Structure formats: C-alpha cells, structure tokens
Amino acid sequence: MTVVVLICIGIVMIYSSTSVYAQQLMGNSFYFLIRHLLFLSLGMIFVFLIMAVDYRELRKLSKPFLILGILSLIFVLIPGIGKESNGARRWFQIGAFNFQPSEFVKVIMLIYVSDFLARKQNKIRDFKEGFLPLMTVLALVCALIVKQPDLGNSVSIAVIMLVLMFVAGARLKHLGMILLAALPLVCFLIIKAPYRVARIMAFLDPWEDSLGIGFQLTQSQIALGSGGLFGVGLGRSIQKLFYLPAAHTDFILSIIGEELGFLGTFTVVGLFVFLVWQGSRIARKATDDFGYFLSTGIVAMIGLQAVVNIGVSIGALPTKGLPLPFVSYGGSALISNMIALGLLLNISRFQDV
Image (cartoon, rainbow, N blue to C red):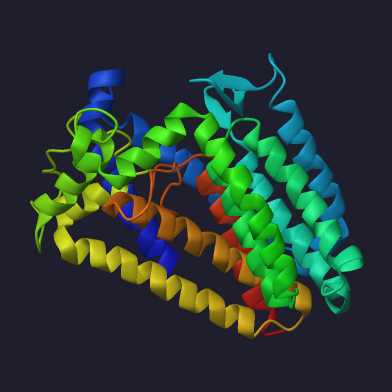
C-alpha cells in the first residue's frame, strides 16, 4: 500500500510538473504522463510475473543473469549499438524508448551476490575464497558503468554490495581496505571530469554562481522555500515553468515541496521511512539466507536512492542523477524498482507458506 501511495503521488506530480513543458515542447500536455503510465504498466507486468514464481528458483539463474548483465554493459559501449547522448553512452534505443542496462544490473547484482552469500556465508571472512571473488565481479561491473560514464550508479551499486557483505559478516578490515583503495580512485575520476568538479563546487556554494553551475540547486531551494507549510497549491508551481531543470525526474521533490508545502514533503519522506521499515521486517522474517540477503539488498537500494535524491533536492548532497523511487518520471529506473518490489513482495508471500 505504501508503494501504491507513492506511485499515485508520482502520477499526479509528474503531470503537474510537465504539462506546460510538454505542451510547449511536444504540443501535448499529457506526453510525459502517458509515457510514465506506459513504463508503470510494464513495471506492473514484471511485478505480477515475478510474483507467479518461487523467488528461490532465481538462484539457479544468478550466474546466467550476471553474464547477460555484463554483456549488456559491454554492448552499450559499442558505437552503433549503444545510444550516445551528451557525451554519455548508457542506453539502448528501442523505437521511441531508451533502455539503460545499468539500472537492471543493480537488481542482477543483488540476485547474484545474495546467492553467493547464501552459499558461502561461512567463507565471507576469508579474503581469498569469500571476499575477493565478489570484489572482482563488483570491480568489473563498476568499471564498465564508469566507462559509460556513470560514476554515480557505479558508486551506488558498490555501496549496496558492501552493505550486503557487511551484513553477511565480512571482516571490517577487508571492507575498510576496499574503501581506502577506492577513495583516491573516486577522487581522480571526479577531478578528471570538469562537469563533476562543477557539481562539487555548486554543492559547496550554489549561490556564488546562481545563474551558472549553481542554477539547478538554487532553483530547487527556491521551490522548496516558496512552498512554506501548506504549499502554493497543486498545479501552481512557478519553478516548473522552465526555471528548474529536470523538475519531473531528479528534482520532483522540489515541486512537491513548492506545491504541497512542508506537509507534502514530510509525507513523502515519511512514506519512504515506512517503506524501509516494512522492507526491513520482511528481511528479518525471511525463511532462508537467500531471501534475507536479497530483501536486505532491495531495502538498501531503494533507501539509498531515496536518501540521495532527497539530499540533492535540499542541497545536502552534490547533484547526482538518481530519481526518487516510484515518484519520479519513469523509465529504466522505475521498471527496475518495480522488479525489485516484485521480488520483495515475493519473499514476503513465501514467509506465510
């Protein structure tokens, strides 16, 4: 029910934030809403398909899924196969729709790592037999995603996997060693790309260049501040009128804050807190190790995406293109989250068997 409420809020706010923009750009105020509903419908189909099988059967497919996921990350980098946009090559184009394989690799990695930990949990403290194999797979996947380039998604996948390994009982010195080794590499990748440096500078002081690199963050803060306690009213946002870029994707919370006020924003945040709590209950009650690790990973994935998106919107984190789960305009991220939701519901259903 919590996800249903978030989805309904998303549908309303996507139309509210895009109707004028869509009319101006496409000549149809319902353009983005219709596409979002199509993505949502496809996601629901996946939910029902996943619910129709025993999630434990996925363990047999964890390695084939991983191979397919890695191959998709390789093929998307090949000119003529992967679609390039603004210097990034992250998508496959199917007709009028784009498909981002890295979003689905998140779920694939959850399945693979959960199966690995369920089989070798007693060896996870052993560096050679338990820790190193997972780190090798993780390094390969993250390297391919960084090549797209997409540093944010690779970092989020790494964080989720490290959380799972911590939960499974990996040695803190092994995890610390990986973090210490990764930190200089992440810093190098940030410094190497001027746009990433610009994002960091904008995060540190967006108002210093409010019409340049800090424009998006300042407009987001203006939107949130304009809403006050009760908001300016549904559909009455000013910032969505070509002021706030990506208002229906990365910064939809800012429009919610402007139109529905602090109470609307607090409600959305509260729904995510409740969703994480519900997911944690499912994880604790899981009847097998695979279900426990998989549900824990799903909760970590959704929770991390929500925290990052909310943090970016309020200026607490540097700008990163992670949509707000189940609320932002759909696409690969929405379908991927719906697949994860189907797995979580599946695990919950088999607890009663």
